[in-house]
Length: 532
Figure (spheres, rainbow, N blue to C red):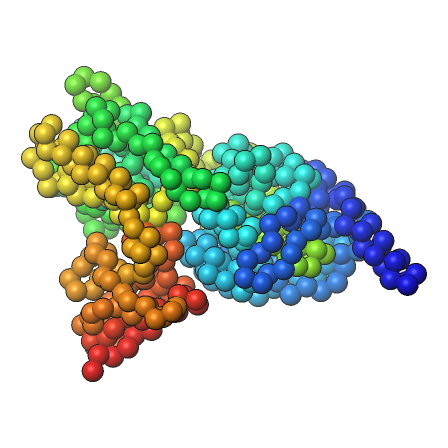
């Protein structure tokens, strides 16, 4: 009995210990704890308590850890974990399995089965709320939260915050867009004028690539004139309303700005590096820097977005900005939870962020990394920082909004540009927003097929019927090899399944044929059933 009591007291003492410092030898890292874990993981992950950290607990040992990160970062992440193993002074050895899972797919995969998800995983900041709701993110303890707040720029701290608590570690502060341009076509004195740039492209018969038929890009035009679109949730994370004024006088100004470009023959709905195929301007982000620099050579130009004029008033084109984050999955083993926080702090520290900047072109969130001379000299990051003055942080958004909002540009492009026609496009958008909250529970819970099937271009949801967790498309589709599709719930992207092993994350048809699409909603696995 005395032995049992001693063990219980020892465990209690261990769980009360406070961290005194990070693992490894990275600079500018104040004391931290291993992280507070109060959200129990869903689907059998185990109950969480406050884990110990290295202040007095022995964290030494070998730990099997699964890390999810984008394919481009897999090899670098393996190297960084090896460096952590050799540099930490706590006797920690990480036996890491690093798997390629994109930031876009990580949240859906985690929510499908938290217990089977990565112990550490990269994800986009707009997925924070749904991951917290699913019990897939560890809440940081006071010391770890202080570490994040001390070492990172303000926007990235807000990106991991829910209420007064923090639920992750910032990885980057570079997920936004700006303008690349060909200096042989666009003179420097024109880069601030949307109208001048369009005229230069028309005169040179060159394209202006701007993916305005994608809501992530088109919404920025509305934000630039002072509009807002804010989704409201209840305490359980359910969307209950939206405060959106795109359908307003200010929204009409934005629609006129969009029409200036989409009505021109030089408009191309693309965010790719299109200079080799005839573009003189491409609105995109840091991820295309290397390709564009090679395409343009000495004619390489980069700047924040320009301004457009309506009725004598100038409006700067706005944008969304976002962040990549590193999440820690709650652990039933409190000691392993503390170890994962040590590794997470190392992977998001100055040195590792600079390595990702050098090798992947990712813009850091760590303040010391941002101050590095090479980072400060980067032309794309300077353009991004200039654009951030006119940007809006991407919040938690209902998954159906992306399809609803992208149609605004499609309707503007199809119009004659009159006030009446542009207002009609905005009214249609507003009606579609209201319909989200009028959706029946049956439709909200049902899965559909969406993709390049039956002549659709990802703009039609095809119905599915279910037998328990097995959902099957009502219709069989004749599909060529290479056809891409997904299954999603409630005609929304909040819950969607494809194939995370493919580059696009979509399910890709391997062999031409006529098939029913079948989804196992419990596992997220899609299969094709040949039509008889």
